Amino acid sequence: MASWTSSQFLYEETKPWGIQFLERFKRSGRLSFKQYQALVFLLTFVAYIAFHAARKPNSIVKGTLSASTIKGGWAPFDGPDGTALLGQIDLAFLSVYAVGMFVAGHLGDRLDLRTFLTIGMIGTGLFTALFGVAFWADFHSFYYFLAVQVMAGWFQSIGWPCVVAVLGNWFDKKRRGMIMGVWSAHTSLGNITGSLIASGLLRYGWGWSFLGPSLLMTFLGIVVYLFLPVNPPTVEAERDGTEIDSTMRLGDTITESFLESRMSTGFDRKAIGFMAAWRIPGVAPFAFCLFFTKLVSYTFLYWLPFYVSHNMIGGEYLSEETSGNLSTLFDVGGVVGGVLAGYISDQLDGRAITAAGFIYLAIPALFLYRVFGHISMTINVILMFTSGVFVNGPFALITTAVSADLGTHRSLKGNARALATVTAIIDGTGSVGAAIGPVLTGYISAISWDAVFYMLMTAAFISGLLLTKLIIAEVKAILFGSEDKVASSSSSPATRAPIDVLI
Image (cartoon, rainbow, N blue to C red):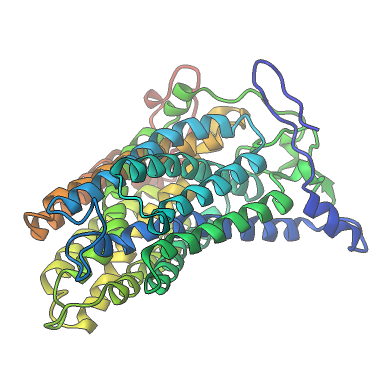
């Protein structure tokens, strides 16, 4: 039964029905801790694959809707301003997504994460389907498409703070970079899945490209509600023979390791405030860094299939379906980049060093792709894959391991209810950049694709510069063995203590 206080409106999470069902058929009556971890990893992984899959149809059908298609496109996107209107649709979605992220993170540290995540998934499935309904209902109103995308953006914003908060509750800091590096492959795999589904169904009509991912999202939303354990106390999980404090509420995350017995005596149940989360050392630099990193990543997410189909490769133009399938190689590179970035950051114990290194390498990769990508299919594939590695690597690192680290920063002094809020601040700020990039591309591409790539390279350069102070602190810590990676002056009086950027 859900219960909540008037001051914090915190829900008491109950054991999921699916877990209760599984336990009835298990001899010991309870899953092991590692089995719970595997279940959480899998469910959050496939959940966010579905979230990203639901975003891809918009990019896949751009060429079909616009005036450049042989069949004349789909009103109102079939006129000379068609790409600009499509850019405005993307802007509406991503703007609401960015604002909604801050709200969802604030609520995520206070509500039942499992139910909240399920609402986000089913709502996303519904409004993704409604965009495609226009195909069968013969809708041509720009404001219909705009309204549907606004609602889809709101429900999409619920997903990320929830899945990161849940995963952070089950995995400690020691291998978080590698674990979340592998886990962050869901972003690229979701893009690949969405691209393949939408491209495969496009031949039957563009509406089907939206219906396929929406059904996947709705089905997985039900599975998440039935089986996802939010945290160890919810299911009375044990590790090393020690029962986890069952009085801890959902969303609680222990600083350092979730499982250290020294922290089992009590927790600060009060969720951290929005402005207090901004003052956690390292949050602001990484948030603004992600603003520019995500601007680059989401421009590729929304425009790469269109770019491929409208630029000759090896002396010929590719079809919309082939372009959509080819664009998945960028996301394959993103999978590799996310794993590499997580592994390297664990080995160096330097999240900022790793992120900035990938970001700076993305600049020549983008330049080479624009200049030489048209020569042949082989060269295009190699350069697209390489660009995906360096563009999506830091994006994956910052939105996963970095967010989880800062959300359990030791400056919080036991106040564990900050993970969803911090995650939302970082990814929400990044999502503002994600909203700006695609809409600028809609206008700039009509003038010159060279200008688009110069914009992306400039954004990457600024993104790397924003981490300079943190890089210097991490280098000093590595060279001199200091644990203090942020000067005490960078913390607020309430949190001033020997703290490092990433615990």
